[in-house]
Image (cartoon, rainbow, N blue to C red; front, side, top):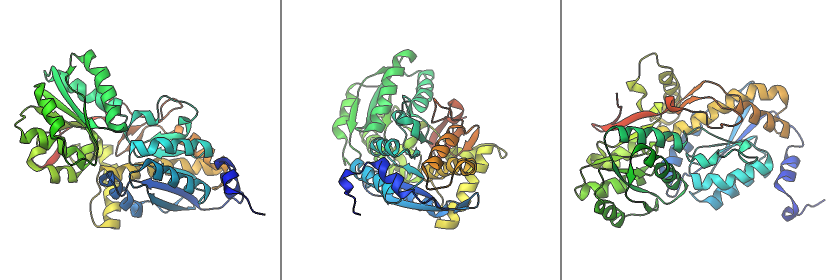
Length: 382
C-alpha cells in the first residue's frame, strides 16, 4: 500500500515511525554549522563526539544536521528528524530565527525541543506550543536586566544601541528599551545590521552623532566585533557593553585591542576559573572540558557548552521517562517533556536551572555573572 506523503500530517507520520518501539534513544540535533551563525554552530557540531553514548542502559543515537543558519532549512531538518528518523527529542537550533519555526514542528509532533538559542520568545509567553520547548541559554531579559542595572549604577545616563537585525538583537532591544527608563537611562539610537554585513560604518557614525556615554551592542559570535571595531577606530572612548553571545575565544582573537574593556553579563562557564575551587560550577565545566578535549584535542567554548548542557538536562530526564514508556513512542516523548519540566537546582555551564510548568528556562540572577575582557581574557568583575 502506498501512502501519499502530501496527505500525511506530522503527527500521523510520527505515529507510523514509532509503531515498533525500539531500545535506542534517538536525539535529533540541528545547529548552524555554516552560514552567519557558524561561530556558534561549529563548536556545537564538534561537541557531539564528546556526548554520552548510553544512559539508563539504553544506547543514545545522535543524528546531527546543519541548518546553514537558515530558518527554512532548519524547519526542513526538524521535519525530517521527527518524520523520517523518529527522534525522541530535538535539540537546536543555534540561532533564534532558526529555532522559532522549529517550535511548530516540535508542537505538531509532540516532540520536546531544547533550543541552543537565547531569545526569551522561544519559551515565553507560555502557551500550548511552548509547552514542548525548553532552552539552556539564559533569557535575554535576565541578562539585559542584570547588565542594565550595572550600567545605571556606574553613572551612565545616555546609552547608544547597535544590534543584529534578527530575533536575538531585537529581543535584546525590546528589553533594553523597556528597562532603560526605569533605571534612569536614555537610549539614544536603535541601529541594526545583519550578521553577514562586512561594514557598520553608517550605524557607528549615527551612534557617535548622539554622543552617548556608553554603547550597548546586541550581537553574538564574531559578528559582534564589527560594531565595536567601528566605534573604536573612530575614536570612541566610552565603555562598550556586549551580550553573553560574545563569550568565545574567537571574539577576542578577531577583535584584539578593539574589544579590550568590553563588559557583559554571561554564564559561569566563561569565568569558572575565577570562582572558588569548590564552586559547583567549576566541576560542571571541568567535566565538559575533559570530555571535549578527549574527543577533539581542543578546549570547548560557551557555544559547545550550550549543547552539552542540553544533553545534561535530557539525560537527567531519561531514567524516569524510561519507567513510563519505551523510546520511539509518543508516551516516551511526553514523559521526557514532563521530566524536563521537573528539573530542580541543576548546575549547568549556563547557570543554576530550576524548571517549572511556567518557566522553561529556569534561571535567576544567580546565573548572571558580570564579565570583562581584560588582558585578552574573560575575567569575572569582582
